[in-house]
Image (cartoon, rainbow, N blue to C red; front, side, top):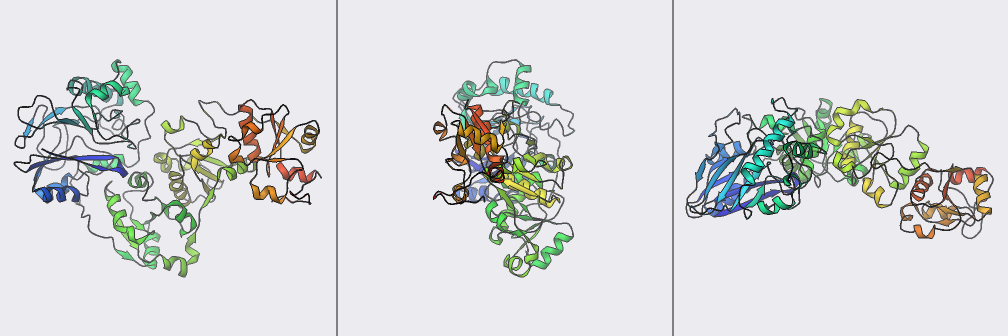
Length: 579
């Protein structure tokens, strides 16, 4: 038997080629749209792909069944509950497909979708124990398919009904297989088709029976509650892809490079309504890009995040690295976004000939953000992570708007007030920030390193609905009295700020190092925390208070200290200044 898993990391998508070596007859299951990998394998092994099997109507990518059928003459098969706009050979429960000594058995497993099926694979005609089972989106490694994706798509099935069907499919069809049966799902970690998928791309029925949270003993009602709670926000393009996968549509030729365009052509296309898309990495985009461009870097979950913020009905012009034009086109085509007008062939035209069309992006560090929060009262903090991620904590005052919901939530934000966007690590936040600028927001920044950088520095977060304790504020005069009584002043600015000027006797511990050096602050006397303007020091005072340390914040920071006529010195004892 030939059994190959083709894993596409950017979509967390697994497809499979199964063949009988003796006969050369092959089946491809859940193919991606750029089908070259299957054709190349079939050619190298002397195989004939005679059938394409879809375990269900996919919503997270545009499948390659039409492309494979056109290229090979293969029959297209779905579960017999699927309703489609092109010719297929439906597969009923119990159907046996013989490739020679290798054979497949179909199991109807509705739940993730009404037409879901699983494909049991037997290596030899007489085998009683399957080699494995292709579980589609019914069973993942560590999770099961979410039953709520179709609930809002007008199918007539609500999440509870599908959840009950899924429970029965798992217990009556998959968990009845021998424990040694290998499990090969259609998705791995990162997919929005579940909330707890493992990075492992295969397992066994026995291992999942023991370790998968959704397969533990529970009632149907408990199961439905468990698998619908805390799911990622449904990506905006899922409805589009689910519908396109039902339809006859234009085939993809993955070898065709988009049309090269001059700058004037690009500008004209954008003026007519095309979206400029820049696929470079966030730091490169931030340094300089075509005004109004949306940034979705190719090294992230490019297709999914592009689908979150782009409209499949609008034309797209690629304005980043011209060498990635074909890759960008193909990866957009994987989710059915086919309207790529062309690409800017020579970006130097933009930077050298039309600098008036070039913008840069504002990015802030955790230190800068902590300072800004204290200085800009109308700042809007937007967290674009998914619900499962934000359970670990959020920044105080952040509005939780997952990236997939941002386009439909723009009216909830003030376009003329400053916005700072954060995600987990600083990649999605640039996607979101560029979208907001594209939509006309005037002052947008993203947080470098995201929530991960903030939390790694030990800075206070809102968790479980509990906000950090408010910091005690003191005036410069009150701070001086505390210092005279034995308190220590901790300056949390950066070293270059400190060197320019600080309070006599203060101790420098930059904000990002406070958690690691908190033992240096644990004294019997109160600690007066200071920064430039009172923002960073307020955050650190909250942190220290949460650790049980007696700390107060110098309101207004070193600026207030200086304005009160109190001394500012350098390390050499000379008069200093505040920068």
